[in-house]
Amino acid sequence: MRPMRLYIDTMDAVLVDYESDGRVRLDNEDWSTPTLQERRAILHAAQIEMERLRDLVMALEGDIPV
Image (cartoon, rainbow, N blue to C red; front, side):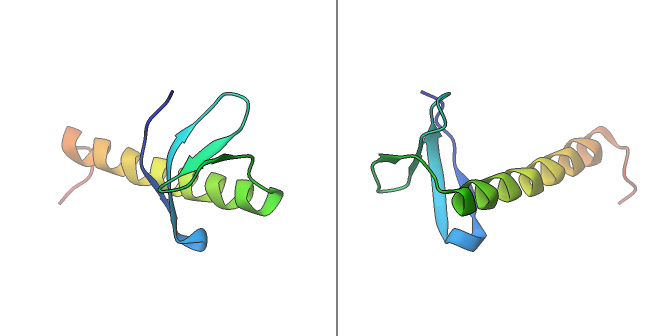
């Protein structure tokens, strides 16, 4: 179990958990295997969130002028 909260804008959904076999659980839904389009949307949302988190880390470490 890998609980998390990732908002997927294009699906207007929140991913709350996933399994190593690729199944995901969206908020208030059962486990499912995402379609190709859903996988792309999840990956895109995750990549954007990683960029935002990198920016946050750099800002808190003082690497980005405010």
